[in-house]
Length: 80
Image 1 (cartoon, rainbow, N blue to C red):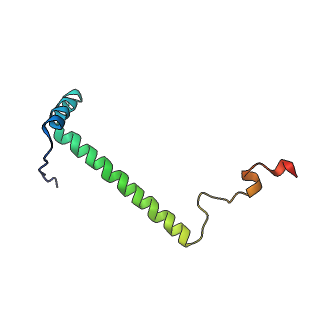
Image 2: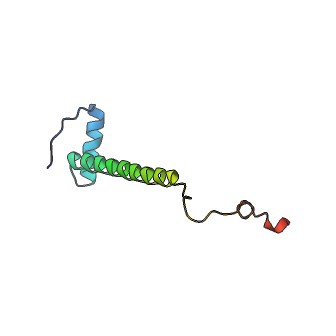
């Protein structure tokens, strides 16, 4: 269900938004709705990834797969 909101912005920003919306052949309302949906989506993805990473840490599982030996990380194996 869609709901309307009221937004107060300065005149210069409103004029720039009108120009931007016209250039994109859309409305200011659609521009704002899409941007808010995008930001909310990114925040939800971040929260989900954080929750999953913290759960892995609690179970003491390595993140990203098989642990790599220190010498392999620093390419020191050839010095032996």
